[in-house]
Image 1 (spheres, rainbow, N blue to C red):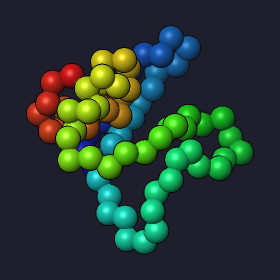
Image 2: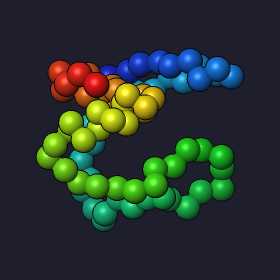
Image 3: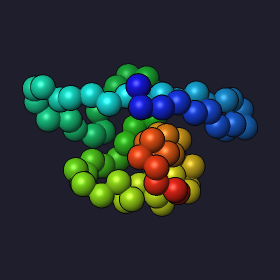
Image 4: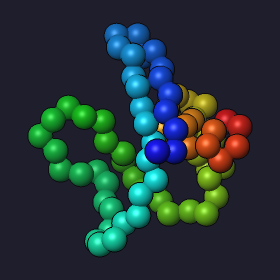
Length: 75
C-alpha cells in the first residue's frame, strides 16, 4: 500500500487507498467496460514525471494526492 486518505464529498466520505502493482500481462486501458456506477478515468498516460498529477490533486483527485504525498511532492 502506497498510502491512504479521506475526503468529504458532501453526500459521502470517500476513503481511498493507493497500491503499487506490477502489470505482468496485457496493457491497462481506460475507460473500462462496466455495468456499475463506479467512476472511470477518461484517459491513460505513461510518464516518468509525477508532477503532472499536481493539477489533478489540486482539483480534488484523492488518488493523485495520496500518490504525490508518498513521493514527497506538494500539490
